[in-house]
Structure formats: structure tokens, C-alpha cells
Image (cartoon, rainbow, N blue to C red; front, side, top):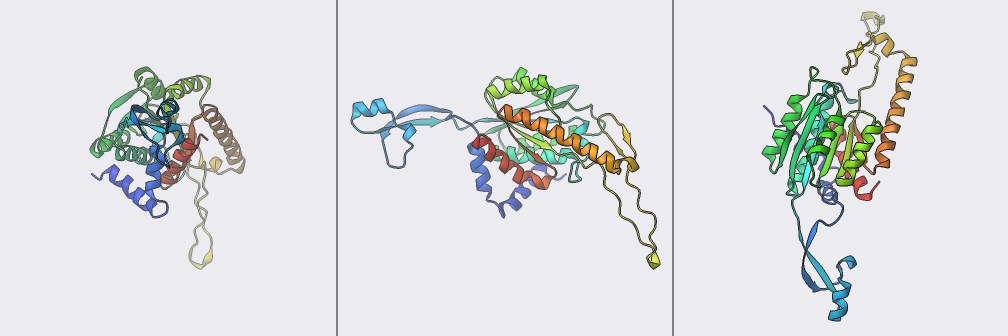
Length: 307
């Protein structure tokens, strides 16, 4: 059985040729706002030190600038949160299953965390409940987390509800953490917004949305000998994995249906983005595993800048 984490690291290596992985490491390291440091002692100011670290009262008594030194709390907790309901077994925009995109995103952020000495945990599930795996360090542990997401997600899984997983976190986690949420194209309602506001007040929150597949794609015509065109391949039937409703291929390929679907999708995107922006939650989309690396880089950068 191939390692999911090995697949993640290979993608990161490819990305490093275009944009240094060290930049990703640096962006991850700046995610936690605040210093999370305990005071240690004072030392003389050296040019280049942060002005904010000067202890002005002690400097006045001493007669020269003194810098406050701190002992870093090096180990933070990253909590991966994802939906393993049947929505995530549907096709993503790039043609993969959405769970494959989710595993890649969770693996990238989890790998960055463990490189920094942080511990990584997981909350996953569906509308019928959630389960958690405790936060630990190490690649073997991260591989187990990714395996749990991959193994729990299928077309026979219960329906999706990322709100159930977020509620589980709100009920069971009091320690300040970094929450990395991966979900499909859901739109937070008023109750979800209240829940996210509560979580955002306590934790740092990052959000990645996995893009749905396009509604329809017309099949190409086929040519017979002599250049006589045969009947075009009929568009495939589509069905919604959430409720198994069928959309015949000829309707899915209808321009009117596509326009209506696209307009509805744009409305959902705008509503989701508006809620997350109001709450100060950095948010990006990814339609395939190839999109994950640049999306994560953008996500960390947006969070750092507070956009």
C-alpha cells in the first residue's frame, strides 16, 4: 500500500522548483498571532532588535536600552477538520474524487506543522457524528490521520455536514489551536456563522474549499472512415451524491441549465466568502491536488496579512 504522505511530499518537492518550500515553512510559522512566549530575562539592546521588545521602564532605570527576552513555547497544536461524508466522494473540478484533494491539503499543512515540531490531530466525520484522533508528532502519526480520512470517505458514507465536526470541536476542545478546515462548497447559514464566530474567538482558523466538478461536459464527435461523422457521444448522466437525484445527460448539457447552475454556484461562492470574510477567516479554493500547493501558500499568506 503506497504512503499518502509520500504522495504529499512528492507534490511539495515539485512545487519547490517553482516556489521555495522554505517560503511555505515561513508562512506556516507566522500563522499563530501573538507571541506565545514567556518572559525570561533582560539583555542589552543590539541594533536590529525589535523596538517592541524594549522594556522602557527597565531601560530608564538602567540608563540604556534593555531588551526583554522570552522562552518560546515551541509546540503548538494543529487540528485538521474535514468532512468524510459522501459529498467528499464526489468528483472535484479536476476530475479526482474530492477526498483526494482533501487528503493532499490536509497532508501539506500537517507536514508543515510536524516540520516545525508541532503536534497534529484530526476531527472528521459526517452528519451522523464525528470522531477524533489525538494530536501527536511524527510522520507515522500524520500518515494514520490521512489514512483515516481516505478510508472513511465513500459513496456509501452518511451525508455530509461539516457543521457537525465544527460543533464537536467547540464542545470538546478548550485549548487554543490552529484549525485547518477542508470542506466542499457548502454555504454557512446563520447557525453556522454563530458557531464559527465562537471558534474564531478562541482559535486561529484557516479554510480550504474543494471545488465541485462542472455540471456538464459535452462528449466529442467520432469520425468514421471516409470522414462521415457518427452520432456524437451522448453526455453522461449526472447525479447528486448527497441525495442520489439523477440529472439526465441531455439536460445537464443544456445551455439554460448550465447558466442557471453557474449563477447559483456564483451566489453560493459569494455567500460563503462574505461569511468567512466577516469572521476574519482566510479562505481559498482548490479544484485538484495540483492546485493544493499554491492554494495553501496563498491561504497562509492571506492569514498572515489578515486578508
